[in-house]
Length: 519
Image 1 (cartoon, one colour):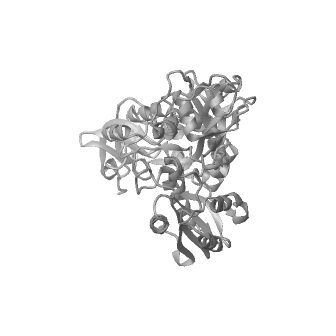
Image 2 (image 1 turned 60 degrees about the vertical axis):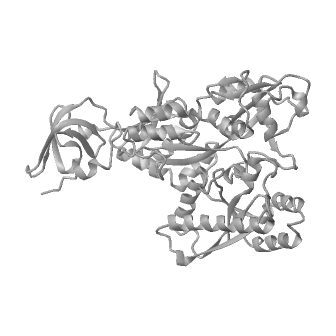
Image 3 (image 1 turned 180 degrees about the vertical axis):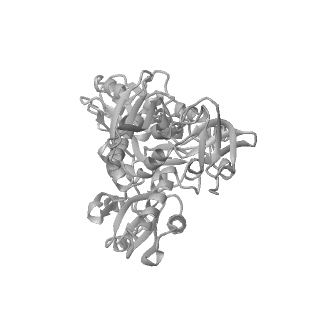
């Protein structure tokens, strides 16, 4: 008798609403007729039935049973359905490009339609069978609404420009979605950055992070304080409920101990924000790097002379301080096969290329030669102090000259030994590359750096411990890698190569990092 996989799966998977039906009576019968399950059909994902029975909720493999009753789906015309909800920056700009690339790779065709409620519907067609095999619906709301829809079971995946909040994690557990903060539940699929922007006619070219916070809070309200004309500053921001609006608070305002001014103008999307700033010579906005439109992007400068722009590499390495990862959050429930295949495709190197072409920052590791890092080494020389002499700088140059830096950088959450969200994703990316043999017969050096607070010798020891912790995390994640073919080493240079000024909290955080160098 063909075994029925039912009760074992019931505790493991809660289905997405891939087959939205009202509860209807069905009878599932094993092919030999010896086992019969009757109950209300709660869902079907193309492979498994989810049935509410007198024994509780059971999940049954459809390949081993015949279905009878008014609720039974038509297996020949089944359409996989996956509903995404959340950040429009992800749903409107990035996801359509990825879905289309996935469809082409699988030999399908894609069409798009805007529904009456403003949602975007992407239909996947199989030209060989002349039918729709899947539908990906994107509810373009905001990060808050994305999590709310997920918890309310009206969406299968949340799109967010911020990490999930503790309250949302608790609500998700109460809704039987599992621990949404656990590894694998939240995926960083691309990187974005917040950038200060002005009108093209504005003469100001850069702003410090402290000045930016004071502009957003209203403490600085005239351009002459920034070296511009004697005119009031009109501030434009994303809606407070959006992920980027909340990231603006988390990354800029809250660390400075201030709050947003009541006079700021809020926008529901990046298009309207960019247009408003571009048309007003006295406006400043904080917006997404990929949606700057006709505005002028300001560099972020530091009191000690550093200036950083949100270049692709600076965002990828998190050297740029206002980096905002783009998340997909998945509950502990089973998606239709087509949805699972799409999520698997997002890990493929070809998907990273699509992300880059769509204007966002991908996570594929790149190698940067030392000759392309002149500014970093010049900063190291310029910031050298009494404790950090020429001998240590020479040791660093000697150790790194024959290597190339990977764009994969690791940083830690503020006041914590836990890697931040982007770095946790970097662990998985680097481990995956090791598993497929990309670094076989090569040498990976995990190099620790620190801020300048405290004695140089102590900073070097702390940086070495961080490098060791990152190496251990990567090796542990690379379960199938042949570590006999990969040489991993540790090195630390403490405060020798600062990326930002140590005079601010964000500057010290940027300087505390672990880089990976390869030969």
